[in-house]
Length: 516
Image 1 (tube, helix red, strand yellow):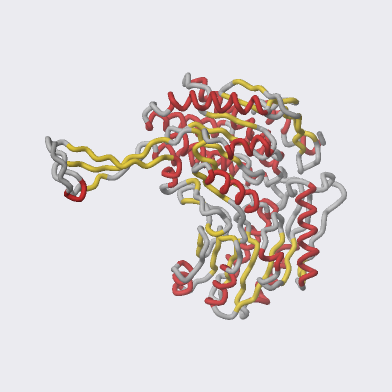
Image 2: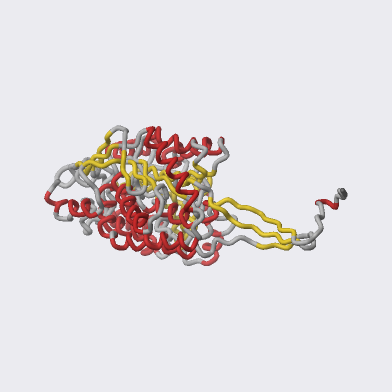
């Protein structure tokens, strides 16, 4: 490990989180076991090996499922507010481990330290939110058309919830799902990305303490660090009532199809191709800040990253010139150093996709006003650092229609707001969107039925940085799923309508007479 990284206390962080040089990738409660192949987790920060993980095998999967089924039968009987207390305790543990877990997220994934700490704060926030919801798992009471009858609706837990997460938010997305799934009475099985397995093991270590301290059954929280074959079993397994999948549209389409085949439920958080419309009435200073952070934050590896800027022709040149100036001031380097703005991409494969996207854009006619390149030399030894790029394009370019998980920003010019909205909506994805304007009429049109077709639509803030209080997710090829706040808890429960007859008569439907 390089001296520079040692200065940031990574070795102490790993020790505090229970990460060893060699780890077992299956956890049920406090027990760890594994029978699969061994994988290695390298940091994109410096290219160094962090630790090895023996992954879950077929037999490990069966044991996890069986233990989860058994745990569910007990956990569902615990009153919801008591389950909320368990989530509250997890939130408290996360407060204690925030610095260490945030640092691990930064080092294993490559996002800035502040973003890593912010991701852990999201975990804490969703725990707080879920604690409140645990006392509000309400149904509805309605009037029956039959005298002496009472009708109402209630919600029941589903059972096993499978959670498949991506590398870019290696801990937060798990917490969005688990905090709500648990207060609803479900048990969870987490298959994290193989690119960030240590973050998952660290979270499970923290949760294991909570389970042990409360004498709760094994199987409420389980982790499977495994390859796609074990993930496919999770998708295909009828015993898994709900699969929450975060990842590419291509894989999400297959997950959706397989889960639907067995009449299971799914939550899909797939690709984004997010745009900010910058109006002639925009505050340009705010617009530049929102655009730059949205485009280069997490090195462009957020599903809500800003991919396109749709700029009114009257302010186009000013915005373009100021963006070029802002990009010239970006500091790229070790994300644990808070003076840097941009860290590395997750791995060399991501770098290759970045380079390929630039080639395709140029081939289609894109004009780069800030050239992209792979950075080399001191501090960039991992080979994962790239320069954020900006290109002037047409929305119809094939490469612009696709999501590239890298810091490439596309500029598009417009004349009327209706044209801008049409450009924004004219992509297959529908996750996040924003408009920068001080014109009330423009803002309201953007948020209306004739406006953005995305699951998230913002005014005078960027496309990333969603709060946990609102439902997170998108439309079209983004999958239509929702996670986190609002009434998303209903996704994790089954709905039941109940009718009680408290009379001595039994009136039949449609006035049918059936005398005995």
